[in-house]
Image (cartoon, rainbow, N blue to C red):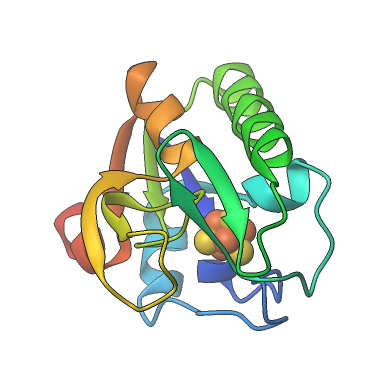
Amino acid sequence: MILFISACLMGVSCRYDGGAKTLPCLAQLMARYQVIPVCPEILGGLPTPRPPAERQGRRVLCKDGADVTQAYLHGAQETLKLARLYGCSCAVLKERSPSCGFGQIYDGTFSGRLVPGGGTAAELLAQNGVRVLGESSVETLL
Ligand code: SF4
C-alpha cells in the first residue's frame, strides 16, 4: 500500500513556524509501506515560515485576518492530484492542521479550542476515497 504522509511528520521543517513533528514510529512505517511525503500548504504556494492560519467555515484566515483560502484550496487540489497519480489509498496526516487535520481542527479563533471538522486537503482526500488517519492512530497501520 502506498501511504501519503504529512511531510512535517517525516521531519521536514515545513510547518508554519519552520519546525517539524517527526513521528516516533517513522522507521517502522517506512519499512512496511511505500511512504510519500506531502505538504499541502507548500504545494499551495505558501512560504515557510508563514503566519498561522485556521479555518473559519469555508475560508482559511491568518491571525491578522489575511485570507489565504485560495492557497489552501490550491494545495488541497495539488495533493489530490498526487494521490491519484500514485494510486494512494491511505494518508497519515498531521492532526488539527487547517490543511491536514481530520476529525478535529481549531475553531478559527486562535484560542486553542477544537471543533469537529477537517483541514482543506484532508477533507478533499477523504471525499475522494482516501482513508485519512491522524498521527495518533498510526499504530493501527503497524
Ligand atoms: Fe505539516 Fe500538513 Fe502543515 Fe504541511 S500543511 S506543515 S504537512 S500539517
